[in-house]
Image (cartoon, rainbow, N blue to C red; front, side):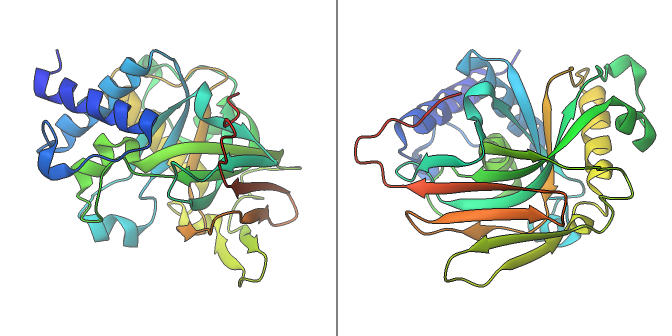
Length: 268
């Protein structure tokens, strides 16, 4: 059972998500002391949302990102169906930090049950039905920028929304190896990256996630999505700005931040 202070923090995080008003860490009900507590808060927040997990995000998939936060492995976050958008997406800026990352998204078609672990990369490849061009929109429910690893994990790995773009054409393990990825913005230099930034290959990240979940007695179900990690790092967009991410010649995804002006954000 999750201790009551962690449940109270989960309630505060959910309220911050819904209201768009971040929490002051100095006045929060509790702050997780380690990753075990942080993932308990994350799971409790997801449960309080009352919706099933539709997608997982994987973060800290580069050595530099891990070293910067003192991590020894990637981190995971959970998104519900309400957090999924489809390209070309229009997203209100009022409650978002406007940070985006280009990522390969996998759709799982065969259950990856925990009792079948450990999983190899070949096992994961067989379980994937499709790969998509994707953009993750990141946000934080905490004030300030003095992030710690437990705080980021408790805050769902800073996951907010996931934009699903075109299916990647003729994708394969070889096609995704060292694939160039580009974020394009108007009147701004292109941000160039590669799938090699994701643990060397996005399938490596998906394999890590399946085994990490299995160690917790959890699995990835058919139909769930896996956002495998950032190919381009974090890019901050301005208000009313559009971005397109291309994954070599395999496919693309686009989204635009728009001013709220009372407009309700579309939920899918």
